[in-house]
Image 1 (cartoon, rainbow, N blue to C red):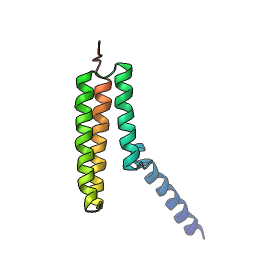
Image 2 (tube, rainbow, N blue to C red; image 1 turned 90 degrees about the vertical axis):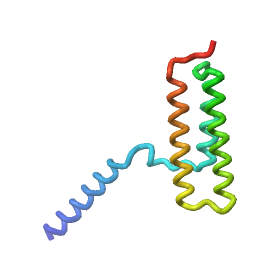
Image 3 (cartoon, rainbow, N blue to C red; image 1 turned 120 degrees about the vertical axis):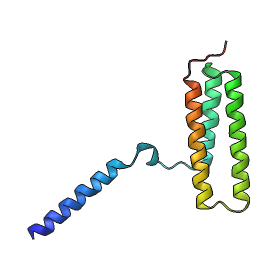
Length: 109
């Protein structure tokens, strides 16, 4: 009886350790369409606030358009798990670039 309680306690403790090892960014799933909307909104907000220069916003929007074209190409044949992972990785990278550009202390005049 005592060993069974120990096994259950160890299993619960192990689950707690695994749950804390998951990064916060991986926890909430966002559909690709929602990620696209968020990136567009962040670029627009950066332009309105002056945190993004016209050149920075233009480059980010061009990268965004390239990524949406790639997504369109992927979806034409059906989106595989590998293609979905590739898109997620690319959207993560673009989101990070938006963040860096918005906080690089270059302001439009």
